Image (cartoon, rainbow, N blue to C red; front, side, top):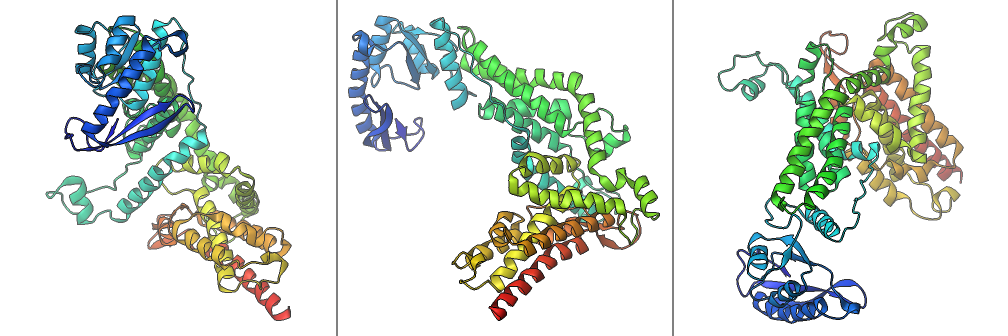
Length: 530
C-alpha cells in the first residue's frame, strides 16, 4: 500500500494506492486506487489469496513471508494465520505487528526482524534475504560493488570546488572585521583572524562517498563513512598539518581507503547479524553503521594513514610542476622560475599536458586520468594547475570556437556545416562553457576533421599551458569565467610581492582568443570567397 501520508497520521479518506504482483507478467502493478478505507477492503481480498497460496499446493507454495508494518488483526489477518499454521519463516519490521504475530498467532518470526528504527530500505532488503537464507540453510554472500576511483572522485567534485572557493574567499577577507567576527566572535580584535581553512573536510567527504558507493545501503553507509572518515582523517586544517611536518595527515587517498573498508564491513556485518535471532533490526543497524565506522577508522589510522600521506605528498610533488622542477627550470632557462620568458622545460611540459588533456577528453580518458589528478592536487583546498589547464584547454577553447560560430556561422551549403544550422549548438555550447565551465564537447563537431582549426586548437592549448607554467596559474573548471579568473588572483602573487596578480589572465586570453579569431577568419573567408 502506498499512502499519500504517513500511516501514523493517515485518515480514513487519505488517498491510497494498492500495488500487487501480477503472476503472469511478474511485474508490480497498480491494482487499485482510492481512499485508505477502500484500499484496506481491497487489500483484505488480496490477503485471502495470499493465505491460500501459503497453504496451497506445491505449484503455488509460499516459502516465506515478508511483513513491513502489517496489520495481523484485520487487513493481513489471514496471511498471518496461514503462516502460523504452516510455520513458514516470517521476516520484517514493525515491532507492534511482529510482536502480535509471534506472541498471539505463534508465527515463526526469524532473523533480525523487529523494530524499524534506524533501518533503511537497503538494510531491510539485505537483512530479510540474509535471515531467510539462514533459515533455509542457503549460502548468502551479497556481492560488494567495486566503484572506480574516478567515479568516487567525480562524485566528490562539488565539495572540492566549494572548499576551494571558501578558502579563497577567506584569504581575500583576511584581516577584515567580518572574518574576525566569523572566526572569533564580536570580541575579536581587528586583524587577529587567520584565514579559514576547511580543506580537512575533503578526506571525510571522500570516505563518505566511497562507503556509500561500496555498501549501497543508503543512510547507514553514509553514517559509517562519516564515523570512519572523521576518526581516521580528522578535520584538521592543512596549516596545523604542515606545522607537524605533514606526516601522517589526513589525505583524500586515506579517506577513500577508509571508506572502502567501512562500506565492505557494512554489508558483511549486516548479513552476519541478520542471521541471528537475538539481534533485532535496530541493533543490527547500530552495529552496522557505528561499529563498522569505528573499526574502519582504526584500520585507517593504524594501517593506511602513513603510507597514504607519503603517496599523496609524492603525487603532489609530481603534479606541481613548476615548484618540483624549479632547479631544472633555472638550469635550462638560466632565469628565475617566474621570469618573463618561458623556459625550454616549460614548453616541453606544456606540449605534453595541454594537448594531452584535449586528446584525453576526446578518447574518453579525461575522467579516468585527468579529473582524479586535478582533485588530488586540490585536496588541500587550493586551486589546481591542472584545473587551470582544464579550464583553458577545454572550456575556453570550446567557448572561443562556439562563440565565433554563433556570431559568424558557415553557410549551410558548406560541407563542414553538414547541411544544417550550427548556431543552436554553438549558442548552447558558448553559454555553458563560459557560464558553467562544462559541455566542452560542443565544439568537437565544429572543428574535428578540419586541419587548420584542429591545429589552432592544439597550438592554443600548448601556448596557454606554457603561460600557466610561467605565471604559476591555478584555477578550476566547472565555474563561471569570472569565478575561475578570481581563483587565479592572489594578493602579492607567488613571490609575496605587493599588489594583486592573476596567473591565468594571459593564458585565458590566448585560449579563448586564438580559436575565436581563427574561426571568424575561416568562416569569413568562406563566406566572402565562396
